[in-house]
Structures are given as structure tokens and as C-alpha cells.
Image (tube, chains in turn orange, yellow):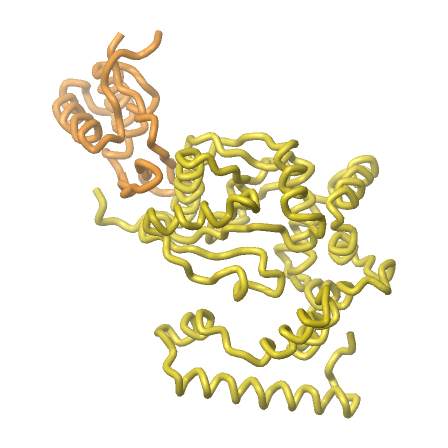
Length: 95
Length: 290
């Protein structure tokens, strides 16, 4: 199946104890780190769990309490951005 | 996405991951220690880190630090000026913050290469920033915490580390830890952590460990460092350097690169302080004897 996964040269951290979701992701060893806050962090965390576009959209919708159709385009655009930055890969995955 | 500051603890974790990636690219062996590298049994949520600590295979330190510099890391303090033990160099990266590159652990007196091999042979791995990083075995992590506590001058944080690393264990575990300390020739430093230095009255490093574990004046430290020097030549070097001024630390204190006049001012201020303390010592004043 095709889907998203964290790129093999990426390190990332979910920031603890924050009022809204936060994460930081970076290609290592050189970076730069990308700080993800609020909805962008929700999308990252949903994509980091793996899966295809609809699975990621469903997770984001569940986490935000929105309808999948409402968030779909924003999620897909942001996933494209993360792939362009080399933080996610999109392609064949195991399983 | 990048216009917000990055959480310090996240940055420390990313620093570990960044130096690990660099090590893997260049075939460097290193162990991640302290902070997020600690085993859960030894770690506490209230133990924040300000930098990443790694122990590098001593024979590869020069190569590793060259790779660090090539990837944007800037030397902050070198081995010679970092501490009395000359055990670590500190580097800073605009993205990742600070990393302490250790070539030895203070307190371990076995040949550094042999000591690393012993620690490496018992290594495990832990995920830091979702990247697998080699770490010392849990027992060695506990010993490292004890040795670190031995030079914390009784700080509360060190006392809590000692609680987790030593006192929370049973007698069998403590016996194994003592055995490992002996294997690594770290008996005196462990004794310092445990308040047992009186068992080593003749060791040349006892005064130094007493200073680091209990505190004292600059003169105490100076005298202890001279006593601990392995050779007369080294002792003389320490005696002379003791009055010198570390340009890197002066720059950090001043917030800018010190001028010649500022360095001279610090030097003469220190010179005056040293003689005042020495005067008190000779007069039987407050200076604690070593």
C-alpha cells in the first residue's frame, strides 16, 4: 500500500506539557528544525503514525473534532509541504 | 512554521539525534549519557538538561570534533580549559544548542581507551527523538551518575541522582556497582560520592575529590589540583595556569570577546584574591585545609 512515513534521516520530538499540541522535526545531522504548533503538530503526529492520506485525514478530524471533508484539503496541502521539506516520504509502505 | 522558539528539552533531544547521525555517517563510536539518554529507572521528570552529553571513543575524538566543525558546530570550550579534569569540550550549533563531547569521565582512571571499550561492551540503545542511540548499560549509567555526583559539591540535584543510582538499589546491586567502579579504577571518585574518602588517605587525588564533593576555596582547589597532578611537571603547569585567565570563560562572563585590558584586570583581580586567601590560610583563618 502507499502511504506516508517519517523520512529515514528525520528526528522528531513531541513537546510535552504544552496547552496545544507541539512537535519539532528535523533532518539530521544538519537540520533545520521545523517547529510545529497547533494544527500543524496534529497533522505531523497523525502522519508520523503512518498510513495513507485518508487515514491521516481521519486522525486529524478525530483529534480536532472537525468533519473529515472540512479538514481534508488543508491536511493534504500540509502533507505535500512536509514531503517537499524531506520530513515525510510518500510511497510504498510495508503492510 | 519556523518563526517560533524551540522548546529547550526538545532541542537537547534533537542535538543527541544530530550528533548520532553524524557519528553514524563517519563510523564514529559514541555513547549518549545523562539527560534523555538516562534509563527510566534513573531518570526523573524534574531533571531538565541544558545540553547533550556524549562519550566518544578516545581514539576517534579528533576525527569526530573535526566532523562537528565541518557541520556547523562551534567550539565553546576546549578540553584543556573546560574543567580541572580536561575531560570534555563544549560545542554549540545554531540549530541544536550545546553538546558536551567527553573523552573520559572524571573519576575513571583506567586508560581511556580501555575504559571506553568496557563501557561499549555493555552498551544498550535508547530512542532519543525517535532515533536509536547507543547508551551505556544501566549499571554503568548508575555509576556515571554517582561519579558525576562526586563533583557536584553537595548540590541537591546530585543528591537526588545519588539516591536513584545508589541508595535506591539493594546491597547486591551496590556490591556490583563497587565492583564495576574497581574495574574502571574509579574507586576514589565513588568513595567521594559516598562520603568514604577517609578510606583513601594516601591517594594523590583524595584532596581534589574532597574539594569537588564538599566544596572549598579557590586555594583549596588549586592546592588539590597540584597534589593530584601525576608528575612534577604537570604540577608546575597547574600551579602556573592556576593564576591564568581562561579567555573563553571571560568572554562568557563579559558577554563579549575580552580585550587585553579586561584580561589583565581579571588576572590581577585573581592574583589579589589568591594572596588574600593564602594570607587567611597562613593566619589560620577560614580557608579549609586540604
